[in-house]
Image (cartoon, rainbow, N blue to C red):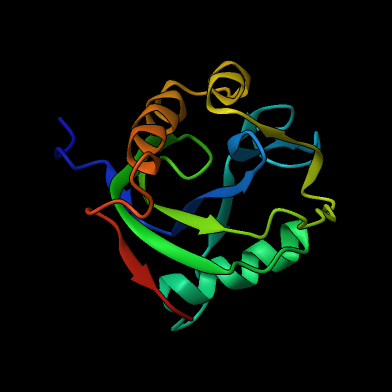
Length: 158
């Protein structure tokens, strides 16, 4: 009988709720992954992998620019962690959920990693994202956005 081992648990990067406030409230940026990428065709928040000795804030700024051409006006660490099993790596991934606020007039310029984007209200975003953990994240963040910034968020800088 083989010796029992554990499933790897890794935290290779971040999950980012990119938001902006316009005339009728907060909007979430929801991205559709390109078919050539892992999870092709799925809708979700922006994700990004850590490189070298980057801080989480540096990962967010770099990945946000690479994937969307956006620059955050501020970023907030939340108490949430997006967790899921990643079959490609046979590991459980834990990704801190960061809120990145961008200006109302921010223009998205997609990289080849994503093929579509939508700015959606919380209700619309909950129906668009592909995973239940993101539906719960939208609910939690929406509640906290009522007193922006939330008392439980910590501002981070790159």
